[in-house]
Image (tube, rainbow, N blue to C red; front, side, top):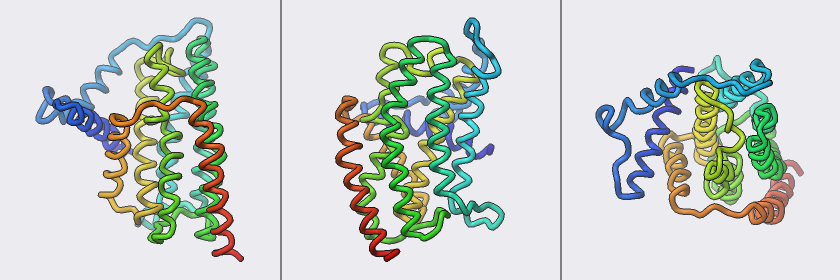
Length: 280
């Protein structure tokens, strides 16, 4: 658990350095050598701020949503195929589908229990974009289940499955709300989105969950298509960061058309071919 938190912290530092290089400037490097202590300093600064509870709220529910959302971050890593014999999950694909759905519910409840119209509308906007994604993502998980004839996540080294890589990567970007599907970022141009009313430790938990999911899906993509090599994981993470600098934000209707027409047709054809080849 400790090393996962450290990984998330220093992956955020890597992102800030990559964005700085893309803008012909340095990233944060004043706190220590190349800013190695910057994530720790930022975390301490956030924890020192005041915890604000909104008027007429239920603190256990309002703060418990962030704790539940953060707990999903650790559960996601249980699904990966570790080389250790004492860590394994026989129902990995089903657990991933479940965790993605619960994460969507946490976003919705976070906006509702904030009792703020800005947070409520921000949560609804993010949920609407991801509900359509859920359908194609679950079908994609079904494709890998049929290929493995098992619910357990395994390393795949089949070159033929690379034809599904681009479509799967687009679904991952929608799930992570990264460019060009960063609708939560576009809400921050006005207020902040579903997390408007959260501060101090609750905001830290939401922040860690966001980047923890990015780290998990980088490992997950590397595992499914490239055998789980570490260098591929770092490349996937860096590629997501580079897209943030290079691509514009898509309109919501363009995203809906992409998911429901193009990607849905793509995964339907892939499911038919996979079922025909490996089952029939």
